[in-house]
Image (cartoon, rainbow, N blue to C red; front, side):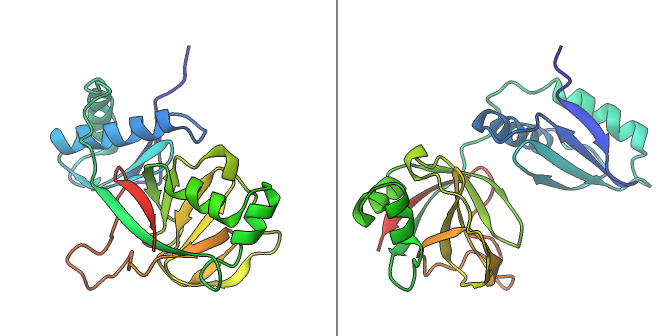
Length: 217
């Protein structure tokens, strides 16, 4: 019998609703479906929901809704999942300058897989990716759908500075740096788009559940 989904307390004002413990498209879809259920059937007291690969963090006001009441409400919400609740996200095209200064690891990725740089670019721009979540810094988009032929390990020694807009590969994922941060992903290109701007009405360019296509600029 599966132990998922399960509801676990996080401090005294949040629960995490876990659907599994691995990175899979199936679990990402369940997380986003459950977030959509909570949006369609609001539970009084919920302040914020934060999706990740296989869990949804639910932050609530314990003075408005005690923990026991919130747990029961989340359990009831889980029964409303049908597998088709979550609305299709937006499709966002992200132009990318591949290689050279903007993509210092492109040739290394190509050499590792015995491909040309042009073949790496073609494989990277072919899929439509799903935004699984935003993390480790504001606006950093983790994307699922990378062609397995491009899966590449992280750098042995992370860079102390990665330019905002950098597009990288780490393992079987691709992602986009929204801010200048340290990082160990293999940088193959860079987009001029601003993924995170706190002064905009909508600070984040992409959200969990959106689809992304990269276009060679």
